[in-house]
Image 1: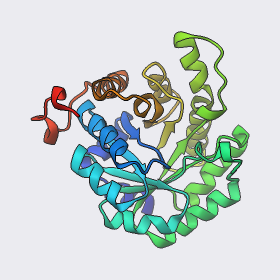
Image 2 (image 1 turned 45 degrees about the horizontal axis):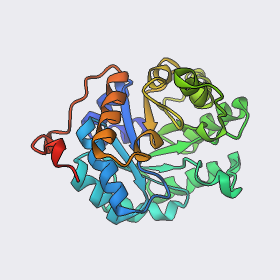
Image 3 (image 1 turned 180 degrees about the vertical axis):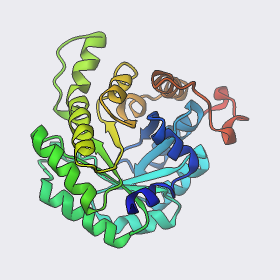
Amino acid sequence: MVAKSRLEKLPSALQAALADRCLLKVIAGLTNFDAASVERISRAAGQGGADLIDVACDPALVQLAVAVSGLPICVSAVEPELFVAAVAAGAAMVEIGNYDAFYPLGRIFDAAEVVELTRRTRELLPEVVLSVTVPHVLPLDQQEQLAVDLVAAGADIIQTEGGTSAKPFSAGRLGLIEKAAPTLAAAHSISRALVESSSAAPVLCASGLSAVTVPMAIAAGAAGVGVGSAINKLNDPLAMVAVVRGLREALGVTAVANPTLMSTSLIQLP
């Protein structure tokens, strides 16, 4: 299968994390082009034991994130033509979405547009691993069908979202579960639909997750999780590392800093 051969081109550690269903992706943000912010997030991801960093589609940010974290880099965009330069700069994979930053602007991505973006990306980058986010604004049955269609169009990984549509009304852990409910529901529905259609693509659950809810994402059928705001909203580098480590441990894997960063003391973080 072509998709399988592309996934096998990922770094071995990423392949193992997907196979073991414990991949942790730290998301810097599709619209975050602030180099200082990306550097802080990337450093925390590397120190905290993440597997992958997702940054805005900019070659300079790719190089920065690699240098600071020592981790593989995914770039996110909704313009396929931007991916080419980022891959040339060292990105290990590309991602269409997620779309959270666009909803407040009234920009909605429908199923047909996402499929077309997928096809265009696959034409430009036939051998690069492609993750595609399924818009959470679609009803769940339409999300399921779109996921199947995206794999047929060339997607290797399907990602869910939903944090921006959640309206938690409780405090504490219950509120965290309420926040994650839409993306957890999508992960369950989509992962089941992919299995039933024999579409061999792992699912990443993202948007609105926390250390409380990432184990639920895996139980719902996801092979990994993507977490952004729980980390990048913080200003304290030590706190950012602590959150990443907490997420790592919540996935059932002991947090281990990237070997290239082991000599860097957390106390010395800027």
